[in-house]
Image (cartoon, rainbow, N blue to C red; front, side):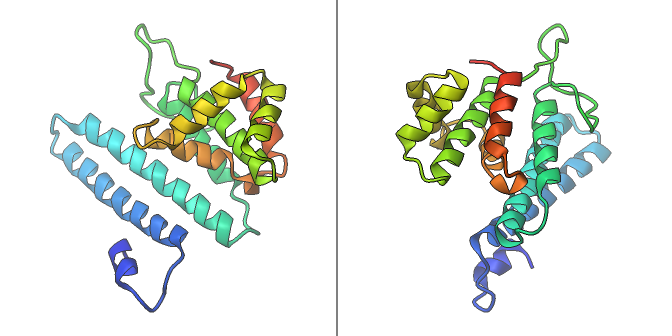
Length: 203
């Protein structure tokens, strides 16, 4: 059943996460098939379509992870979390840990980008959200993250606001932040994020 059939169906009344998953899969399918068609025809805009297909696949896997995490809590979604993180990092030029990307983005001169600012901000925004999910108000949650990282509370607040804007960071960064804040991946997700921040510290 496609996303349009879900939308029109009154029988199933699917949860929001399932509809979003169906939509993401439809969009990924269209983008991948278009990319493959262009590659076979050796058209000049293949690289742009290749990147679009990658982002659509990333979004589809992210929606799959969210759907499983919210509806089938006994299933372990950490492998999907690790895959999404790996894809994001290699897309920005980092060395792959357990996957291979043929042509990662490189800085001029061929120097790999170890982590970009949006990646690091996504880590800390997710850390604040985890503390809020535990019952802390936003200010107290930001204070806790400040104590653990040294990042000013005003900066954290501004990053959270930026992450929620329509004209904020790219969709891949927003999806990464959502993946980071999903505690179904690990009972110690907050501590893992703080450690990840320390390993990739960029301000």
